[in-house]
Image: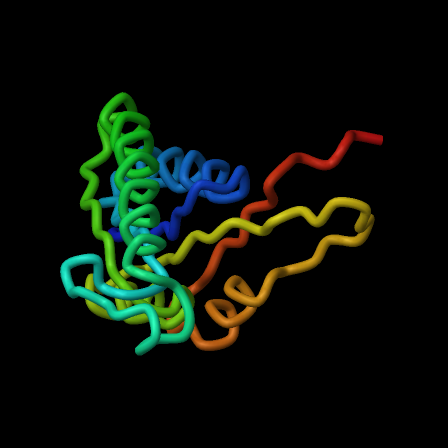
Length: 152
């Protein structure tokens, strides 16, 4: 039985479709929804000296946090309209690793992620993050395409 659904979100079209799908599933199943945004980079609360670090800066992390908050507000509105109990979480680190850690931590019965459609690529391709979640998840994973394929 699916009691807890975890959906990973960012500001991509694929993530918005994944979130909408997760909300619909949670509503249909009476499940709790956990929405996870992962901010890649430095903890925005800690000062970072630019020369001391390679990779995202504190400014990048702050922008990531603002984006995560906006996306989560959108998903919370969808969930509330559907009557779904929602738990919003923002974490810092590597996306796949954090999604898997959160799934374990909340006891998720299903993980939902988006699949990004690549411009000019006609064959569906699962991205690196979705692939890692699929490979290492201890529970079923639903991969939602960013767009619906045209009907034949």
